[in-house]
Length: 419
Image 1 (cartoon, one colour):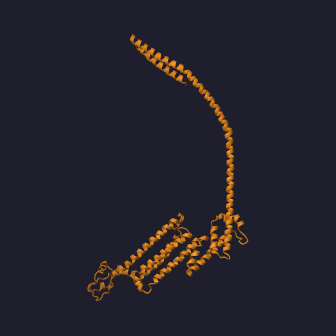
Image 2 (spheres, one colour; image 1 turned 45 degrees about the vertical axis):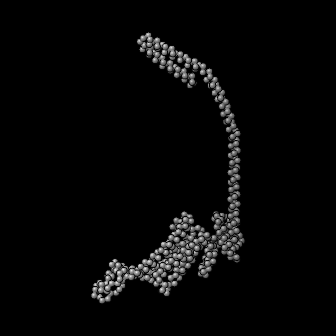
Image 3 (tube, rainbow, N blue to C red; image 1 turned 135 degrees about the vertical axis):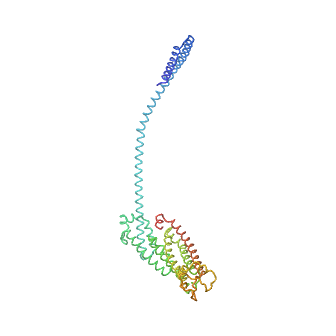
């Protein structure tokens, strides 16, 4: 609806409303004066309506001119829209088709390039595998260079299994000297070297040749036998712990040193110090060649041996000091008797007897056996126990610290298995 129509409707509505009011006022007029006032009001309204109509008529031409301009612009926009559709359908469509074709060609080129790289990588890995296989066999021959052979096996372990066991490697790697597939050759070489290293390691331990022990201990992880190496090494150091503990106990065989109040406490201390020295000195070697956190497995074996040797020391101390007999004596006396043990010796006329003693049934017995508990001796036992517990507490804190550090360096799966 145009503006003129709206204004006309508003004007008509205004006139009709004013006409209704005027007709009502004329009908309700009761005098000539009221009629004249109503006529004056009608004339004023007529003048206003006339002026508004004149304004609308004068502005109609301008509105018609603006509407004409809008029609022209709409026609121009229509032609521009047609031209734009033509460009989109022709030029841009051709460009999109060309871009899609180029993108497809680039993707094919990238795929071919990736395939070429993968092929070259397989060829390089097979070439490396062949060099490792022939290197292992050659080193295990006349030269008997075990370090070099273990190094070749370590290099071969880094090649993916699908390459080692693949048909391409089984056709390329075998030769007249090495006719077996590469996986079979490497497995046999690993087993042979493992057996050889075990024999040489045991031989070195019997000869107490530390350099040779270290040499073969470092070779086990190179051939993929880390568990075997840690096992024999743990057994080796445990033998050293047992030997050292026996020497400490045998030092007091004469009986004089064993009577010393702190002989067994010192033996236990020396045992803990020896184990701690092994953990501290050998930890770097184990983690450098076997990986971080692997010393925890050796500590586990050492702790089992320390428990055994420590138990022997405690049993020897208990037997030498007669701890079981002392505990039996203490349980058989009343508390008042134990208190009297701290006091000076009482007269034989009124001895304090042990509960359940035969002397309680014969008060006239002239002589009573003096089997009272020596509290000074008990105090000495408690002192020994206190020293042993202090050494044990210090040792357990040290071991706990080393194990905590080692477990943090292990992968989460191995941490759970170790715990």
